Image: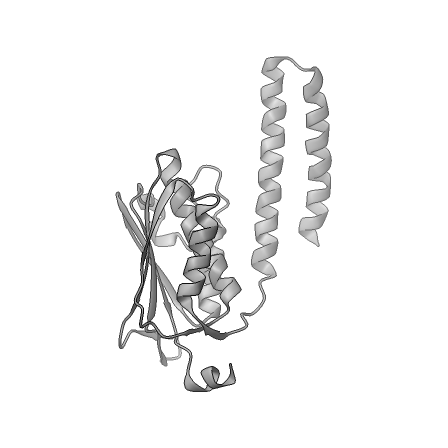
Length: 225
């Protein structure tokens, strides 16, 4: 509701600036263009804040991760990732995960988009990798552990994350881009956490790898579906 109340006057400010720009000098046009651009950036930020706050609990069912990876790859190649070479490196024996396919697709699209934006017009290569890691376990605060054997990696050959944000990249409002909102990776982290999973990143110039670890679907879940 608060975001809605803020977006309404911002729309008025944007419209007024666009009307003013019709009768201004080149120098003054730069100011109205700035007003419009910043207003739109604030609206985008508010929309992401709304999305972050309104995220539904995942509907966890058996999911073929390769189907989700393929949907993300095809969507990226038709749009924001058209300048990237996207390589598939899948473990064909990977069992189903327990997850929400739409939310997992959102995660992968976000990670691929980040890699494509970091590469810029020069393009580059993104490797989508899946594999099974026996015994990989997440130790929780209560001392209990959960097996997370299903691994997905999104690896790119771009410039890498700025060193000063690497440790905090999943925190809200932390961004390595000048006009970034810093909510995309925070949303990714929340979705994976809500799945009972784990996400981590390693980054250096020429190689950034986001790794997602997820639980596999148990026999009971497979039987129900």
